Image (cartoon, rainbow, N blue to C red; front, side):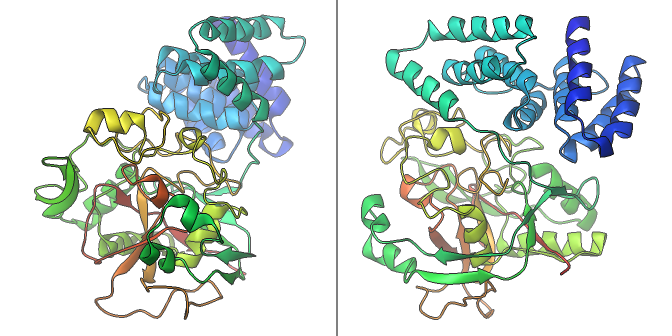
Length: 451
């Protein structure tokens, strides 16, 4: 452990930026003095501000129970954040966690990917860690089939660091936000996509005509879907009732059926603090945004339909932000996959891969899109501000919501963990009554940014 701490400290000095050096030095001093509670508090603040070396420290402290309860899932989340920013030590540690199944679903393929990335990125002088990463990669390679090994090597070869996004947070319990730049995009499904995805004519009409939309000003959008823990704080403060019923996957088949006694507190599967809250209706999602506005003095709201698609695409024009194909889905999203099929018995229309989760996954468990947003496809579907319309013939072109109509069906986007692949696209649109709750439907918020 002492050797690893020396390496962590050295890497912190190398990668920290001058503006954060003083705060990082105070955190390192607290850590050296074994005041782990103070060290965690300081490191966590730096990590949430995007300081990569602090993210690695936070992960290490969660992994070893230093200043905080031991939590492999939290450790894996923070190692991933640092790994995506090209921290070799975090990449190696994430490979180890995938190999052992600690905090993440066990995956020799992902272990091989991250060991390989780390081996190529440790400084040449750090022979010890290079050798360990190569040994790890060799160890898991022996367990892989040729096709799996080829896929792992392809992912490692094509991997690129994620561009660091500026993260805002208005209070310690407020959601993290990423500023999305102003821009213009083509909204709707382009020619060929409905046919390739097997859409019915009515579903295809829902996404037509393709039209240009201008998002004239930057917006701050939730980096993640609103979590169970964040929503629970709102519910406690406002004395919000849990709701009497929710559409959940159960009964013979199984099929989705509206079930009494199910709610965001119990959607028929276990919920942890960092999983996306589900079984919330549109009114409850809007109430949460209004509550944040009152608490912070900022203007929070649900994203408009156009803002959501602009953010989900992240500058791409493909069906999903990683491309048109389905073969990379499990590296980017929690989707209707083989794991889901094995647990539920639903065998039709799946992504032919394993993401390791049957129901919802902790937010941030997969790769972000180019805007630094996580889970924009899969995990939980997400409410938007708009009333739903049958097509885009009278849609706005400035990114604003359609005129509100009392009692209208509300639009939601993304496709949740149980939706078929054709639903898990940037262009997909769904409608539902505002008072409806579903166990695969949550939301994220936006906050308006001063011009």
